[in-house]
Length: 195
Ligand code: FE
Image 1 (cartoon, helix red, strand yellow):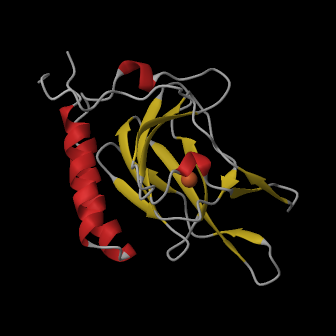
Image 2 (tube, helix red, strand yellow):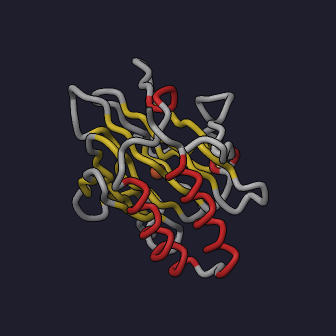
């Protein structure tokens, strides 16, 4: 039987970090280390929040800070699934739990044209990557596997499912979107009577 305790420990530690600092570089460095610890262990994510959908990648909310300072989401990639090119507008940390994914960064030229920013980064289990408007905020993410499910755990500096952001289409147009979440219920991490 899996234990939710690692997620509760992570929520408490991340909350304590944000009590200490609002500095983005500090949050990405120290919070990234906390996330690396969380994804080093693949036993705690409830099965219902690791289920792929045949039509599109899933974004399951695992926790939202009551002050809106951060949210934690499990991204579940069915075989070959990918996001559109999109931004976040807030800092984000991505930790690989199962399988693998590629993140291709993009930057905008002065004339507004979007060009790939270096090679796609391959993220493997236990590895962590960061995005933000300061260090590079536009990317496309896709499952590295055409025949298996991949799962990554993301932490963002806002209630990300409610943030107004942008997708960048092939034809150069930009569309506003609010991602929402795939789930209506979140896991109970607060039952401290359970091991
Ligand atoms: Fe993203």
